[in-house]
Length: 349
Ligand SMILES: *Cc1c(COP(=O)(O)O)cnc(C)c1O
Image 1 (cartoon, rainbow, N blue to C red):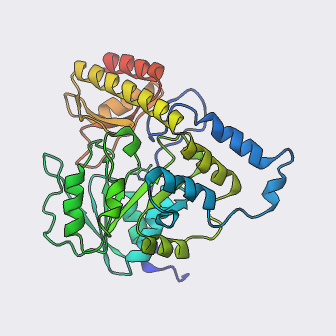
Image 2 (spheres, protein in one colour; image 1 turned 135 degrees about the vertical axis):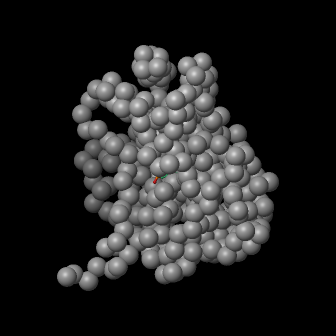
Image 3 (cartoon, helix red, strand yellow; image 1 turned 90 degrees about the horizontal axis):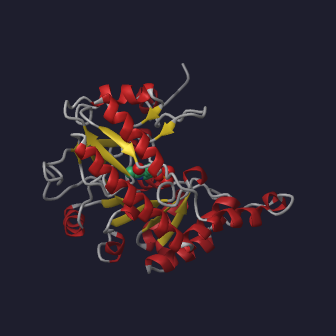
């Protein structure tokens, strides 16, 4: 027997959403953005690469200086308050490594992003999940939560609602440890906890470029927090975690806020129209602050609709979890894609 750590041997491992490799699918299952990224991203990558790819010979800037400076300006903080990352998943992982030792507790809401649990298991820390009340507050959250970290996905995925800032501030005060606000979808929402980082020393905000910036394939994320937290995350990360192309892509994407706005407005328009169409078809739809909707058919049988869509080569996300199996999470694609899924759903009934 090889000496695998017990928690690694026993854990199941995270299963990412299905990524079909052949064409012909309408892919609405992993919340990717249907539109291309800013043209400036492509230009920056090509310029960085050079005619012969010669820049790749040399290591990238280990400190991500430029991207951090641009992000800092955007969020109105000093650059020591920002760290870039190889996808926001890297940040979630390193936050756990920084704050939760073996046997210590990490909390999160179920349903939200179950990857927190996988990362916690790898660390050998303990998971505690909390449910939701009917009005989307945390059920039975203690007056004083003693866990080392609490992950708050806001907007929530897969349900799509958002926690308001007054509630997030209350939670920060009740958390003895760190409150991580995972804002993967916040660009599609109408509020953000970003500015609370300055007011509450235990709030960390994480963002990803995978959804609103159309850069899931680049693997980019960032976090904003007090310099002490950022310094700790800097110690833990791989030193060259971001390659040269990713670094210039991050800077170009952050600098083009105008394109981000156009992209996000388009997605939100399609989302709101599609939500209304679904309601006309008899679906219950939670008002969404993300680039997806959680939709419940009238017979509350998500699997039936998932299978019927799958037969038509339309992929959405079905969760067999008892709290989610009555519905489906549908990513917002292009207007044309949403017309097609609407037609399919009309047919399926
Ligand atoms: C997509 C997503 C992430 C991961 O983002 P990456 O930057 O692609 O690693 C993190 N949290 C939530 C809630 C997400 O939906």
